[in-house]
Image (cartoon, rainbow, N blue to C red; front, side, top):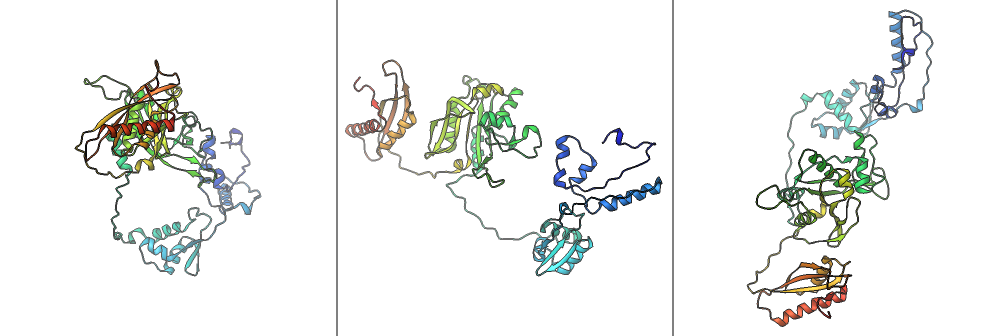
Length: 480
């Protein structure tokens, strides 16, 4: 280091010695950042004795004079006392030390042990104030002193006594699930769990999350792991890309993990939100290769079924969504009791092509807390009476979703309506261009008696009237 001009040869007649102290905080990481390490940087970034500079240079000078001869020049010293580390006294509570170590050491014994290693100890009430010497950078808190006492007293002299305590069995709520329950459910539906790093590539945050200002690491372990993730989806996409490179085209994976987002207050530590989320990705054939059925690629509705199975028996609702990671026409917001809990959709074709992800991977990402909520099953009498099914075709605007229409019909449905399901959608010839036809099957049944036609007709009329008033819907065929 320094080159030939600063090297020593047989013709050297004068040698300049430097002995210094540099603050560890100013040195730490700099050598690695510049790719230029040295023995000095290795030592200084870990802390050295700041009182050792003058004795060290005096000793080096004495050795040179003893071995090589010559004459010593003057010593020039530049000291900034205000910048030197201040060795503050560390408070030690003897009672806590005895409790942590499990050894009944009296205060005088503790003082004697600490003074053996050149620690300045003075008593202050029920505490000991311990000031470490300049060469002990490793003593800063009470736990450091307790560790020192354990070492000096001797680990073999500390009795191995197993801790004792009374165990209280806690009731597990039936209205909640654990993350393991979620894992088992998804594994039962053919998914495999992955665990990815929480720090990811900057490009992933820009592409998949439209996050131009992600949370950056001050000292990343690698350039491609420089920011904290705000979504689990990019990591699953990377898992898919890796598997495709190894000829694994059918991929079904999920991950439970924390994401990292800034809060509005922007505080250094408290200013970050770290929610637990669950994400799923499915790509390739919906079933493994077999003879019993034709091969079919996984689609939006396959993964939607997995999502609904995860939340069952609670019902989810979905609204159209525009998301930078998802296909513009095949993405939805996931709502639970009217509250947004996640997203669902195909990955955006731009990123599918850019990252070589194959044909139309489908993903969803939801809040883990929402997935852990469970609904206790409610038992009911199975009716022995015959059920009545009626079909209802409504004309609505293209902007009105089938889920919205079904929700409105359920609002007006009396207790004897057991199910309303969509079975057909049509738009085209014979219908206004700005309208579509949604056909629902309404299932009605009573537990005590057979329903009469008049009752069924009244229910159907009430459903139509409510849809007309709420959505401007019209019964198909009426007035045509």
